Each structure stands twice: as structure tokens, then as C-alpha cells.
Amino acid sequence: MNILEILKSKKIVSGNAIEEVLGISRAAVHKQIKTLKQIGYKIKSSSKGYSLIGNKNLFNEYEIESRLKNPLKICKTVKYYKQLPSTQTSVKKLAEKNFEEGFIIVAEKQTNSYGRIKRTWSSNAGGLWFSILLKPLIRPDEASKLTLILSIALKRTLKEYKIDSEIKWSNDVFVNDRKIAGILVEMSAEQDRINWIVAGIGININNKLPAKFVDISISLKEVLGREVDRAEFLAKFLAKFEEIYNNFCNTGFEMFVEEYNRDIAYKNEIVTIDDGYNNIVSGVNLGIDKDGRLMINTKVGLEKVISGTLRRK
Image 1 (cartoon, rainbow, N blue to C red):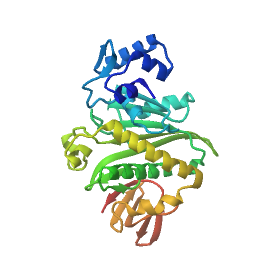
Image 2: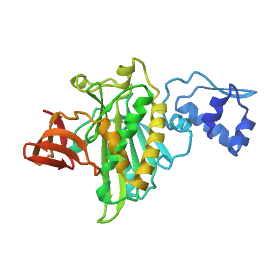
Image 3: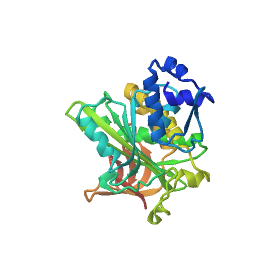
Image 4: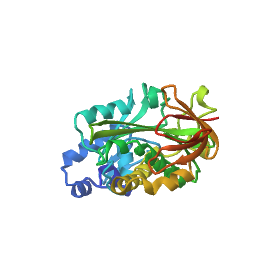
């Protein structure tokens, strides 16, 4: 429990009560109250104690952590920044310094974000832009499946908002045939072991989409017709991902194949996949196999694609 949770639990809380619950000094209480005020919380002080007033739509690490119902190993530390070039770049720097698994960086806005093949990604204020440091005990050739299980976690989270979505292999999530989220997984590995993996996720929540993207992208706010509590969404996602991640690391990917294929976009349609090296595969999308490879029924037979950019024919 932190001081914000205590303030949210009652209309007014005495300094002594906060000291006892957190096991800290009166000076430390004052310091934390001051910090909360500096980042935007309205806290009234009186002879009876402290009360939290009129704090709607705030988004920061305190709000995220206060919504996590249980401790998560993939979310040990959360850092929030008003602006960064890229959360992905920032977490990769921490990974190189041997920070532990479960370090998450969230940004209100990114100025130099990127997706697969270094494609630019619009990251305006109001969206949910974050990266997670992971250190799974899996083989390096299994790492690409993390993109697939992250997609499943996102789809399950959207379902809690009564939103049906599709997974566009291998790293996008679509709603109403428009992109709502993208995933990027990067890693450092040796021949037989992973040093670290950084998973970057971008989700259109309350952000205004640039005009050039409105026909191909969509936000959660647009779907629901209202603003969404981003801290709550992230907490829900992290809890779902933790469960899936643990199962994946312990038992493998095969248990998720059926669920993934049930929700895959363009199933049984003609698609093309470009691997970025002038190799194009065209045919009917049959879904993924147990190794996460996309199965394409081409004119010359079945081909299994490891990675690439998929488009509807």
C-alpha cells in the first residue's frame, strides 16, 4: 500500500494513521504529500489530517500502481514521463545496464517512437505508450512468440470493455478493421540464452489521431464514445499478460494457438506477406501453427512464414 491508496480509501486521514500504516516518519509523510501535490494532486491539509479532492483523469505511476490488485513480477517498477523520445529506447538502455525484469517505462508523449522495421508511430498525448523489460527463461528462437501472447493479452483486455477485436499477425490489434494497438519486441541474446527482451506496446486510448491515420486507425475513446481511465486499462492489461506470460514460460505456446487462430484477422482470405527482403508470399491465410508461423496456402503448396508484413490482397 502507498500513500495515495490510503488517501483514496477515506475522506480524511490523519498523519499519524499514515505513519503507522506505512511505517514512516512524519517528515517522510510531509515529503510524499508535497511530491503528490507537485505532480498535480489536490490535497487539503487540516488539523484532522489530509484529504484528496478533485483529482480526475490524472495519469502517472502512482495511479497505475494503485490499480494493481496484486504484486506482479512483470511490473516491479513503473516510471512515468511527460515526454520521451521513445520508451523502447529508454528501457533498452536500462536492460544493457542489467536492470531486473519488471521495469516499465510509460510516456505521455513520444517524439521519436517506432515500430517494426523502424516505421514511425504517432504517439500523441492521451494514448498509452509503454515498454516492459522481460527476462524469460526460454530459448532465443521462442522469443518471437512473445508478440503473439502480448496480442492475446490485449484482446482479452479489450474484451473487458465489451469490445471485440482481431489480431493482425503478427504485431497489430484491430477493431472495426482499423488498428488500435501495435507491438514491438526486441531482444539481446546469445546462441542458447536470452539476455533480455524489451516489449513495446502502443495503444490508441484517448489520443487524437492524425488526419492521415483516421481511416486506418481507431482509438478506444472513439469506439466507446467516452474517455477511458488509462491507468485502469494498463493495470488490467498487465494482470492478464502476467498470467499468460507465466503459462507461456512454463508450458510453451501451444496452449494459445487455438485462441489466437479464433481471433486472427483475414482468416481464410487471400493475403500477401512481405518479409522486407523482396520475398513476397501470396495465398490463403490459414492461421498460425504451434510454432507461431503463419500458414499460407499458395498456388505451389503450403508455406509457413516466420515474420513479415501482412496485407489483405
